Image (cartoon, one colour):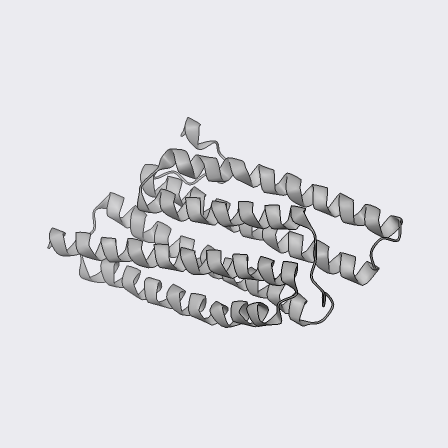
Length: 220
């Protein structure tokens, strides 16, 4: 019985990793679409959102199967319940990557955008998503703590981008509508980082049994 449970947990880890990769690819494509003005990539991001939604349903089904058909001990219950929380955040990450793509497709940002800070913010957000899922699979409390710390970096990036774009509006170096859309893109990336942080917090719960959003995991 226990061997079967361990196999299903391994399957859960694989499916969570795959869902995380779908989210990472969606963010990367959305950012590249923004940089290149590539409408094809933007449409692929929107299509991928449905795949991420389906992954959420599949993992949810597997989690419920583990809870109902097996006899999980307390630590197993934490792993499965944390996974159920994590997939909700990953689904929202897919939504926000799709939101970025929709801004691009709307035509408000119709040309390629040379804005390195947004690309840097995107790269950091992707890394946080990757690290948060890896922390769960590897039961890595230190990596989960790093994700939570990295959220402050993305927050600072968003503030810097917002200030830069505001200054560009003031000096007539960018159209107001285009500027607002770029700020929204940056805001969606900042929200993606927030969701990655939520995932890391549930990783801490799965390992320690403690869920305290915003708490330094090194002190748990």
